[in-house]
Length: 187
Ligand code: S6P
Ligand code: ZN
Image (cartoon, rainbow, N blue to C red; front, top):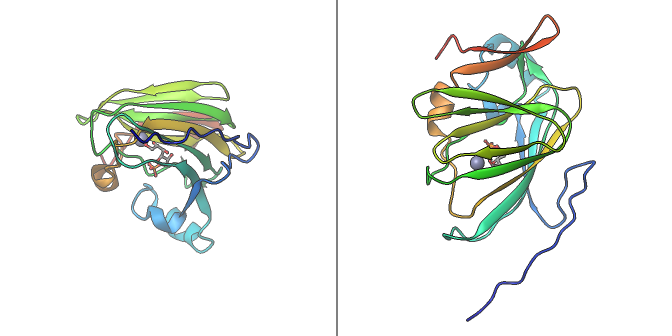
């Protein structure tokens, strides 16, 4: 039997960087069609800011193994809508996931395939359990980077298709200086 080597790495709790991890950058231009206010989107696209970065340590897609990744989700808004991650179901839809909030302020929008949405606020120390079958998207509702760790089955995969097409049934917006979770008029 060949055993894999254990890994111990220290996450930089200020920046979210995991040494040796694979880095992925998502700019606003990678999120075309995701935000409700197209005019505000096109306006901000001139700057094309980085919306989030992911630092992932991933294994082969095998049953029983685990991946982990930090996400650094920058503060910002497109119109009234706070910056968010694309959001996905797992390709193996019954795979669950755990998130642990490290820095900043935000939350997770989860949704069943029937469109039943739930908002879970997150601050440093919050653990979120993403049950099997729920789509999940994180949202930065603060004014500094929102950083969290995700731990997920190595064979979970990502299914971005239906969220890209339809989005979530709820939007997370700022109105009158408050964070509000409202119905998505395009849903
Ligand atoms: C993976 C996990 C996270 C996200 C990351 C970016 O299962 O949920 O590492 O991949 O937060 O979000 P997204 O929706 O663009 O993959
Ligand atoms: Zn996931």
